[in-house]
Image (cartoon, rainbow, N blue to C red; front, side, top):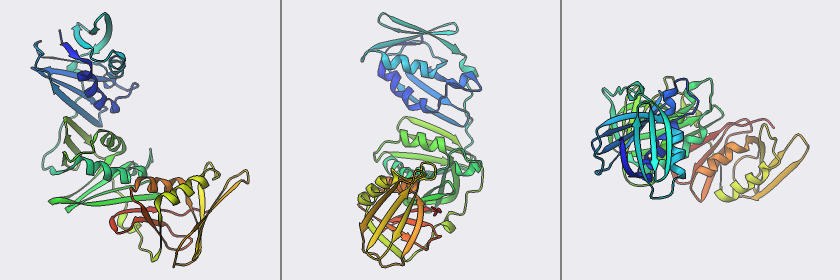
Length: 368
């Protein structure tokens, strides 16, 4: 016997936490498996894709069987546990190269692979910089920038978030070359300077796993690896080796500013987006002293036009932007008002929160 009569959710909940990095189709079959290790009353679950490793464990004092470990198909085990009746008692029994999952009158036989073949990520944390920050705060910070990460860009260093620790400040920056999102926050003490690029997959998993609480997450950062410990989870990730763009040079300083209700401008953009070109997704901002006109059109010669009364003191402008990029920034800035800052018809737009120097979002212009 491996694990005896344990509550279904005691197995399912930890499995749900780690399964996000498991892919069914893997170059190594064992990477589709979850490692389950039993040591005394502790039961530990581990998943890896060789770049990231997530582990979690729980304690069940009722477990009396000998210590052992096995790997089994993660998604199949998850699907079985999900469809079992609530409060089911599950028994896992190792029978040579099979795992027998027994619940009342139901039995499922799954193939296994040896635990000793599971490729655990080796920890390389010598001379790590160690910081702590509240989970809820960090989740919000990642949410403010993650949408600007590149997706499968050949400039691999853009496929993630730059994390900068400098003195008592933490900065997060993401860019795909067309827009850049930046957020800075104060830490509770000073730390040695460290810059790493967290991979896109790691960032997405963190956002899913972090809770909106004051409970702390501990980061241990080296040049090649980061280890994050929070709640009952340990996440170890490689970092992207590459030179991130000079983000400070990209962030402009403009005097032409316009402050608007965030929801009103977001809804206007959502309406204009309906008739924008499906491929390029462009909208034009035609800006005068008393009016902001948002215009979109498409290849079928359809057009949408939105007019907003404004109080604007800057120069008149006619400039185009990708409407999806603008909406991404507005959707993730949880504030009542938003400030747009403009250069000229060939310059980027800077989106900020009034009275808040922490968040900056830059979108490059486009010809329409």
